[in-house]
Length: 114
Image 1 (cartoon, rainbow, N blue to C red):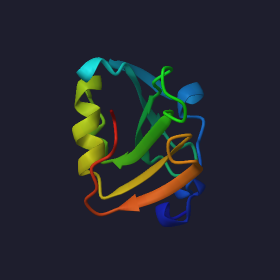
Image 2 (image 1 turned 180 degrees about the vertical axis):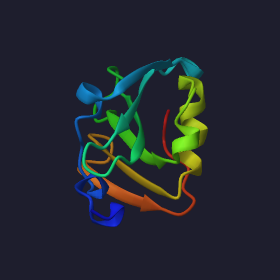
Image 3 (image 1 turned 30 degrees about the vertical axis):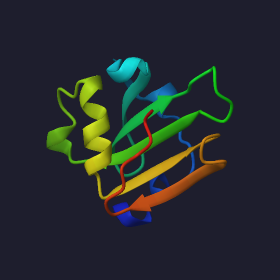
Image 4 (image 1 turned 90 degrees about the vertical axis):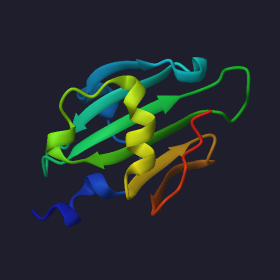
């Protein structure tokens, strides 16, 4: 299977939290965003997954995932997730903040972590 044909590239939430490796919480700006590393079981693509929600604000839940080169997927620290996700050329985002189960973002876009 070609990576370009894999279902993991579809704009929807995957089971990254259940089947991925939890890397820890990103505490930058007191956001407490959860960070996972996930490898697609079909095409072996590595993904960085980030989820954060602000309970005091309605429609604040958001998640982001981006493809990572294999060499970058080692020794990732949670506080590096924001810069890695912002630098990625292909991201899938979703959650109540976006009022969407998933959207594809390409090009330079600063993601709304806070």
